[in-house]
Length: 199
Image 1: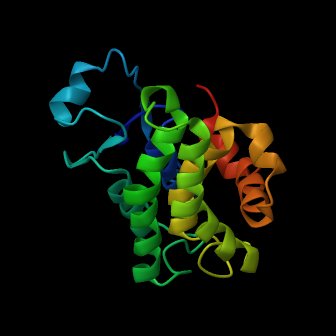
Image 2: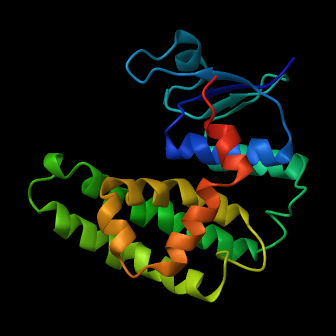
């Protein structure tokens, strides 16, 4: 019996969970969720009813993407995603992404819903609030926290992917060589292509 993963293909939280499961080599029964018509089984498992949710064969339920990532990587971490970085540093970067950057990203993506500022102003807030600090780090190294990819890289990448996709021409023209190279490497990686493949 395989673990059951409730997922949504483009959700950044679901993408990072799938990346960890993929690199750990853990097969799952993936249930693609329609956000407009969430299945009863998902609602029964998790009151939050948002993806990702992983139901393990022993009945345990993991409701947070980071919990799924750490569960998978603790089971099998062939590329050393947990070992590459200082766990405190990794957790700090991920928290900054989730708590600070994600709200700024949402306001930029959905600027029409946040008319108190222009899209460009929301974009500048996201740049100043997170993106430029990430760029500074990635100009020094191909990876965020060391010589190899870490759990922080995998956890943050899907959100930067969304940021770049809001205004692709603007993003490509910006002097952000560290982030642009890092993002390009992720987008053409076999692991990303595998987890984004349509069933």
